[in-house]
Length: 393
Image 1 (cartoon, rainbow, N blue to C red):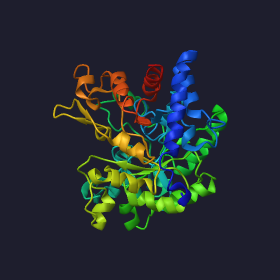
Image 2 (cartoon, rainbow, N blue to C red):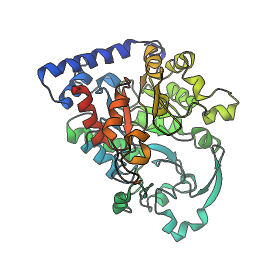
Image 3 (cartoon, rainbow, N blue to C red):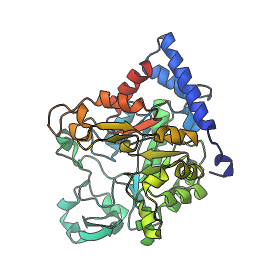
């Protein structure tokens, strides 16, 4: 992301807006929402999927969160594959954590007790440990204590069975993917589907791993370079909750980069480690966003930073974040939309069952109306239909 990208200001945004306006015009032609979303994404950008970079994506973009994790155990090829089948524009293939022998694998966290069957493997009983992970005491099994060969003997399980009992049917079916396998899968799927498949990997706990001598960014960059996916228009968006990880990646690769933002009162862990007193609230001020725009193309805020919530969990006020980010040329991909009651704002819940669906379409509509450029969702089919409703609106 050389200097030529640091002063894009509103240009990328204007192209997106222009494309979105063009897409809205599609209503007159009676195009389906999907066709119009595709038109919106590719207007004026040649092939629409290939080589167009961020601007080639439909707006709002549907991002399959850890695949289609509403239906399959997360971060498995079963989950990634289904996300594409269900209409995701991008698959979040890869929360990246390292193995002891330096390979990158796809797990939501380095602690794998909740997402694999490691507890059933007696040969690994002595690997169970308590560690301090970003200031939090965590007990379990950690990827950095296993070789890749050892991790490949494990199988994935559903992380939140209380909310997703049906997903437990698939426990034990898939192994843990490596990032290199994901890059090969991406090429294979792109060929098979006749359209460019996008992925959205995240560097997890980069400060923690750097201290262990397992720096993530160099490993990510090396693999992207090897597979020719380290360019500005490459279909790989990189994300992290640690701004310094994104700044490091900005020096190593030219990929689109996104800074993830947690609750307003939290501090990124790299800030805690270096004594930087700023919180997320400071990062989302016009000044903070301007600084982010100097090394990244977007932000991934929690949905609560886009519309705040009342004490009872219902939606409150829309913030100025969308407008402020767009003003400095940043796109917004908030997280995470899920269909089940506990994850929805109170007014969109139906009944009290933890695994029952609420009015997810109502919630999608409300968030899309804020002008966000896309959203992470565990249910890409719901997201794709909600976009169709929104674009056709």
